Image 1 (cartoon, rainbow, N blue to C red):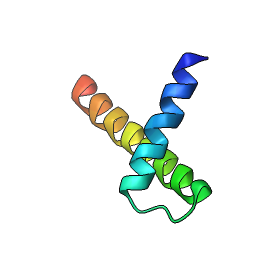
Image 2 (cartoon, rainbow, N blue to C red; image 1 turned 120 degrees about the horizontal axis):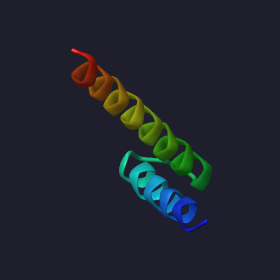
Image 3 (cartoon, helix red, strand yellow; image 1 turned 90 degrees about the vertical axis):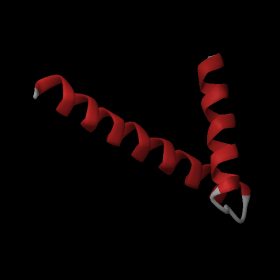
Length: 51
């Protein structure tokens, strides 16, 4: 449960840095950033693991 709270706080901070205009927009931008970051890191990791 604590990890979800930590991820929400990180998403809010990142979303605020990316310029969210409302709380919902801030969380949406933060979650979008976290999603794309994890996806890119997973692709790079898979590429390095299987090359």
